Image (cartoon, rainbow, N blue to C red; front, side):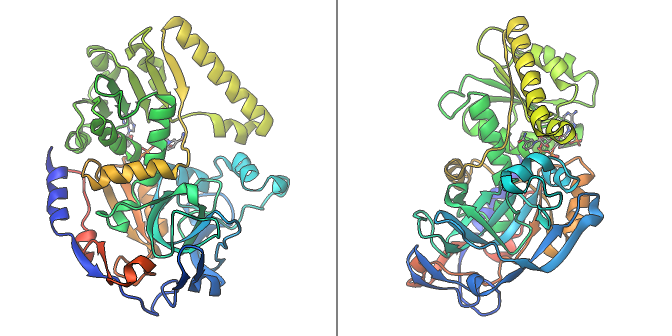
Length: 438
Ligand SMILES: NC(=O)c1ccc[n+]([C@@H]2O[C@H](COP(=O)([O-])OP(=O)(O)OC[C@H]3O[C@@H](n4cnc5c(N)ncnc54)[C@H](OP(=O)(O)O)[C@@H]3O)[C@@H](O)[C@H]2O)c1
C-alpha cells in the first residue's frame, strides 16, 4: 500500500500506555474533579471565566487574526451540550473564506436570528472547524459522554470555532476519538470526513454496502477532502480514480487510489474520457470542471455528479438572504433538470453536515487502520496566522493542524480511568510523528 501505510504501521507499533495524571498545571486540568458520573462536573472550566483564543473582530486578510486571553468560556446553555478542552484544531479552506466574510449573512442568521440587523454581532468570531480534545463538562441530558472522554468533532460554521481553549457543542455533533490517533492526528479528520460522508452518502448515494462495483472519480484528490475520500471509498471497496498534480501522485496512490490523472499534463478531460465511465464524481475543484465532468458519467444508470464548490453562500453574501437562496435554488434546479434530460445523470451540490454518529463509524475505520490521518503541516497555537498563511498558499497535501495544547500537557481524567490509572494513548514523541506526503 505504499509508504504512507508503511509509516503508519511503524508508528502504530510504538503506541504505548502512558499514565494520565491530574495536575494543577493547566487551566482546565486544574482541579477538574468529577463528582458524579456523566451528570455533574465541577471542572475548572466552570470556575474560569475567560480563555485564550484567536479571534477576528472584522472580516479581512490575515492581519485581522488577533490573539486574546479574554474570551468568555463557552458555557453550557442546554442539557444536550458538551464542553471540550481543545487539544488540537485543524484548518480548512472555509476558515480562509470565513476570515474574509464568506457566508457571513447566512451564518449570522443561523447563529442568532434576532441579531441579523446588527452589523457586528458575530464578533469576536473564533474560526477553526475541527477539534480533538477532552470533555470537561456535560449538560444534564448528555448520555454518551462524560468528563475525561477523549473526543473529536467537526464544529459547524455557525458556532464559535476550535482555535480556542474550549469549545461547546451538542452531544450529537461529538464522537469518541479513535484510540490509535494522537489529538494532532485526530484533528485532521472530522470536518473533511463529515463533508465527504454528506457528499458521498447523502448526495452521491454511496454506502459501505453498495460500493464494490462502483467506479468513482475524485477531482482535487490531494487536498483534505480528497485524501480522506480516497481512503473511505477504498475501505468501502470502490474503484477510485483521482485527478491531482504530478507531485501528489505518490501520496494519493499510497492512500489507495487505483488510477491517477495528472491534471497539469495535457487535457485532463481527454485523459479521463479514454477511461471506462464513472458511477459517481466527487468534485473538489469546481469552476470549469463541471463543463466536462458530467459527460464522464454512465448515462441513464443513476450516476451522480456531486460538487462541493457551490455558489450558495456567495449568492447570499452578494444578493442578500432571500434573493441569494432563490437564485441558488433556480441554479441548482436548472442544472439538475438539464443534466437529467440531456445526459441522463444526476447533478447535485454537496455540503458539510454535522454528524457525530457518522464520525463514530469513521473512528472504527481509523482504529482498524483503514483510514490514516494525512497531516501535511503542524503549527503551535502561537502561530495560528502562519498556519492560515500556509493554507492560503494552496496546493494542500492533506491537512494543516494547530496544536492548541501540548499532547503531554496534563488533561482532565475520565472517571472510568481513575481506578486503573491508565489509558491508551500515543507515546508523546511518536504521537507527533505525522504522515507526510511523499
Ligand atoms: N460545500 C461544502 O460544505 C464544502 C465543505 C468542505 C470543502 N468544500 C470545498 O471543497 C473544496 C476542496 O476542499 P479541501 O478541503 O479538500 O481543499 P484543499 O485541502 O485546499 O485541497 C484542494 C486540492 O485540490 C488540488 N487542486 C487544485 N486545482 C486542481 C485541479 N484543477 N485539478 C485537480 N486538483 C486540483 C490542490 O493541489 P494543487 O493545487 O497542488 O493541485 C489541493 O490539493 C474546496 O473548494 C472547499 O472550499 C466545500
